[in-house]
Amino acid sequence: MHSRIMEERSFTEETRTIHFELLGSFSCREAQDSKKKNTAAGKKAMSFLQYLIVNHARNLSAEELIGQFWAESSSDPANALKNMIYIVRSQLKAMFPNQENLLVTLPGCYAWNPAVRLELDCEKFEQICLEVRKHTGDIYLEKLMSAIALYKGDFLLGNESDWALSLRRYYQTLYLDLCKMALPLLQKQERWTEMIAICDQAGRVDFGSDTYITYQMQALISMGHPEQAVLAYRTFREQLWQEFEIEPAEQVEQIYMLAESMCRSNMDFQDILTLVAEKEMETKAFFCTFSVFQSIVALEKRHMARSGEESSIAIVSLGNQVTPTTDARRLERVLLEGLRTGDPVARLDASSYILMLTGATEKNAWTVMERLNRTFHKAYSHSRACIFFRVSALKPDVVPQKNL
Image (cartoon, helix red, strand yellow):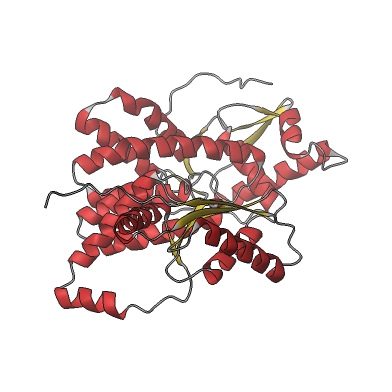
């Protein structure tokens, strides 16, 4: 690797400065010009230019560039590199017609003209991230917020090269750490709008995390918008299942139930009666979250202690030789359509469900399981899925005797 050889000097007013934005949409501008410039370079030429920009502080050898961009895809990599340098120089000239020789050739390597100063938003972002922990109190929070504001989006969005992906993950980690540090402080100061904005963007960067939907729902509830919290939860839950086939964490479920109860409390007496009485009867089994399922089972155990009736719990799961997602959806459809409308069903994980058969003995529950198994294989005869059942009688709660 060659090192850059240049005489030391301080930047003067004559130093040419170019600002590059790499967080989010790629763009650039000259220091004295607020108008952003873009380039219509091809995908590989764009990635090559961006690589030069990211590594602007050092000289880049021909060997490094060839290894990065033509390791296996060119019979004449040296000539391919020369052609790419020509293309990139033409692009830079089109973007900055008043600038000359932005990219210079040195013995065995390439470098940016030392008379040009490059400023990158990602470098500024990284610097603030490294320095933010030096501060305390309100200054600490405001430093966090200023760094978060710099993150306009993922690093070099659209560039799927390996070198860009690794840096993208690095900057995502820095950003998400900032958000996790800022959110509890914003919550303490009741800065709800800023919390929601951060959760909205951070949730897109790290969708699988429950952190951001939790803070977002809490902020919406605090602002008096429980209905928006309910909508945010339902969107999150649906996307979480589609993407990862998992359910939200228990804390998220609890906040959702709070938001729903607040929505109901905003109704008057007649509205609540209408909502309960006029809700259309479902023709399928009752599909619910696991926490709701637990509450239904607890209520049924109390009912059994007084009525003397029997009920059963069953776990239904798929074997290993299944088509991911497809067989799980098939099983869910068979359960919802094959059980009674009063039987609750909840998802345990991507390939198993738990259900309660109200008023069914353990023997009757096994009969129902066998029927569901036949229904599945009759409807999906080409499926290789093997369905397993575990059945247990539900034990009633012991009701303490009251003195009469």
